[in-house]
Image (cartoon, rainbow, N blue to C red; front, side, top):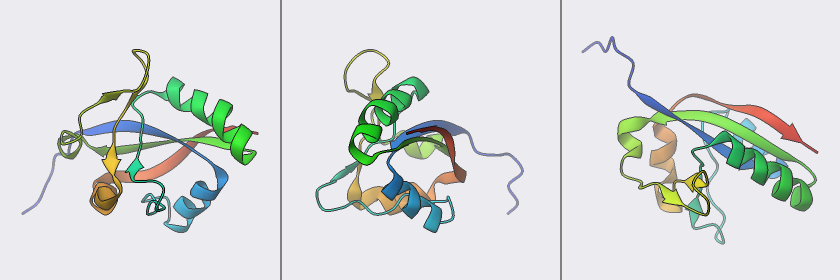
Length: 119
């Protein structure tokens, strides 16, 4: 069976520190690394400004650098994760349980891209 139409995708952003970014690089920009035991949930966000704020204000302070990544995931797959409002109206994120991250990664379309860097 030949698929001619591209599946609908949703753009997500993820603020990340240098350690996580190194792991993404090792995975050829195609997947997010497994969560650490103290990280039961993977949090991609739905809004670039929110990702910038976290990378700039939190990652730089804690890790010396912060990066905003942008990636696309199949929209139909994402529908299983309700959008969580973590603060104001634009502070929207998805909560992906750590044990589902491999499956989540399998639905990423294309590469994870770094779109902003703060130091």
